[in-house]
Length: 421
Image (cartoon, rainbow, N blue to C red; front, side, top):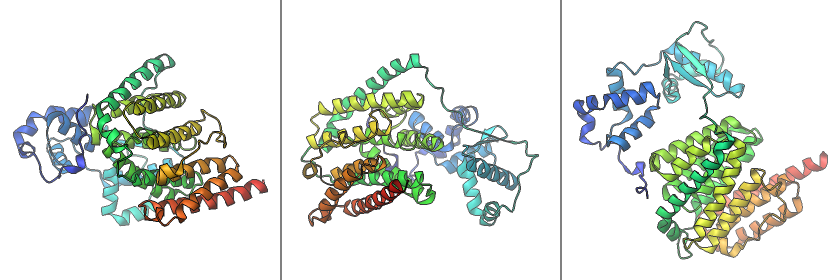
């Protein structure tokens, strides 16, 4: 059993524990803070959370920066260093490389560089316009690609899978009362957040793959914001959405997948703490190779469905999660390309708006596999649902309307290209 989740956003950052302003407390914890900052090169936001969780020590990032400067550990970047790192990062971004910078042996928090440039819009504009050049003599700066966690060898994967399944059982058997309550037929929730997350992710995937990066990343950020709410509420769909985000861009953008894994890792850490089963589960997933990760995801999602069926979850929720499961298997290449035979019969009247979002995703998969006739049939069902005055009262109606319009345009575009080729 683990402790109840900690919702950090409910704590007012202005209300600090008395020890945060006590110099003696800072001196007492100096060794731990120095180890996290200097030896382990942890980001500042992570240090704040670790010290809060492990030592009940509540301080703002600004207070940490003050103490680290006082101890001679916090070094502010100079203008020439900011210019050098910004230009080098732009070059590496174009080449599809990730970048981690170290200044005098200390990892640079890129958020500090962005804040510096926001204070100096003139300098940022010169960098963007290519009016400045990098300095070849800046030996204090080291840039390299981030090192992934060590990949587990095949001999360890079986043991890792067993461990993940134990964590999964621990999660559902400790939180199952709340999950069952939120998924019960009498639950009044309209699942708008999950629909927003699902449709935003689908839009992001389509736009980014089509190289429409700016609107694509705007949609992806929206999806991640909705994911945060799903995490905080610990909805029954949580594990499925986590896996969806993890594998969303694996086939096209490995670097983006890495960043999404890191983002989800940090979010779970902040919301739940490092002892939560889902946080531990994600850390183990990250260490697997892509091939093994897909196989293990398929196993744990099947196990998740089986666990949820034992805790009085509603039939409609089981049907929704089964749709999500099938879509993830297809995306990971486990079931082969989506065909109409693979699409389960969806009881639209039972699933309502949530069912529409899954129906749209099935239509999207069918379009990609050139089954335009079946894709038309799915979108026609969506349109009939959207025309109902009763359904138009649903909070997610407008989002589903946009999703439907995008699908229709996607069908026409894909069909014309397919015929032309």
